[in-house]
View 1 (cartoon, rainbow, N blue to C red):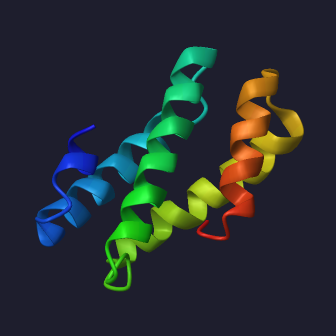
View 2 (cartoon, rainbow, N blue to C red):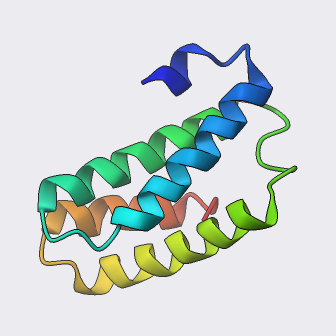
Length: 100
């Protein structure tokens, strides 16, 4: 992913993470399992970037904070109700990270 190779461009990467969070919010209830799995993978990449960039999301915009809250609610729902066991597992791991 572009996010992983551009860690030296902190400001731009954090902006791209925000856009990716918006994409996840928009598609999170998609009926296609592959789409949901891809979104969960994308969230794991954002988490990886946040760990590698010391400033992380400390300067999140209100819009990004709102996206994170929505994503957290979706992850909690996915752990309990997603019909795909891989999605349930990935959502659980993301919640256990403590980031969401």
